[in-house]
Image (cartoon, rainbow, N blue to C red; front, top):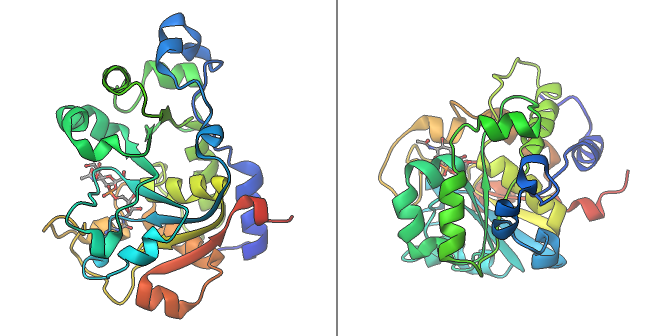
Length: 276
Ligand code: NCC
C-alpha cells in the first residue's frame, strides 16, 4: 500500500513532522497569564535521552497478553487517555512515563480528569484536532474542544507535574504523509492518539516498541483491554485514519511478523538512529 520504501518513509517522517510542545513564544500563548501555566522546562529537558521505549495501545487484544514485564523493561512507557494500569499490570505493565490524552477527554470528562489519580503519574500531554493546517491563532480561537480552562485548572491543582500541550501543526504534517502513501483518498481527520504517540516517541527514544497497535493473534472486537465494550471501529477506525496508520507502521516495522502475531509488537527506530 505504501509508496515509499521504509527507509525513505522514515526520513520523510523525521524531516517533515515537527513534534513540538506549545511554548511561551507561540503566538496566543505569549500572554503573562499563560506564562504561569506552561511548563518552564521543555519536554526533552524533562525526559532526557531515552533508549528503549514502549508505546501501549489501548486495544482489547492486550487482555490476557501477559506483556506487562516486557513493557516495564523499557526505559519509558507511553499510554493513552484513560487507559488504566491498576488491576491490569500483568498485561500492560505498571510504568507510565508519558500519558497522551485527547482534548475531548480533558473537556467532556473534565471531572474525572481532575479527580482520578490515574492522571497524576508521569508527564501529561494533551492534543486537540485542529483545522487542517490552521495557523495557531485560528486554532486557539476555534479548538475542536475548548480544553484550555480545564488544562489551567489541572495545572493549578498539580503544578509540579509536567503537562504539555502538543503543537497542533504536527498532526497535519503527519496526515499529509499518510495521504501521500495511500492509494485511497483519506478523510481529512487527524491521526489517532496512538499514531501521534508513536511519532512523538520516535523523536524522544532510540528505539520504539509498539504493543497491540497492529493486532496480534488475540485480535478482538472488544474495544479496550479495560472495558467490556465491543466495536470493530476501535481497531479499524471510523473518525481517525486508523487503517492507513496501521499500514504505514507495518511498512516501517523492523521487527518480525512473528512478533506481531505473538506479541502485537512492532519495532521502529528513533529518529536519532535514522540516517537519510
Ligand atoms: O480509544 P482510545 O482512542 O483512547 O485508544 C488509544 C489508542 O489506542 C489505539 N487503539 C485503541 C483501541 C483499539 N481497539 N485499537 C487501537 O489500535 C488507537 O491508536 C488509539 O488512538 C484517541 O485516539 O484519542 C481515541 O480516544 C477515544 C476516547 O476519546 C478516549 O478514550 C477518552 O475517553 C475515542 N473514542 C470515542 O470518542 C468514543 C477514540 O475514537 C479515539
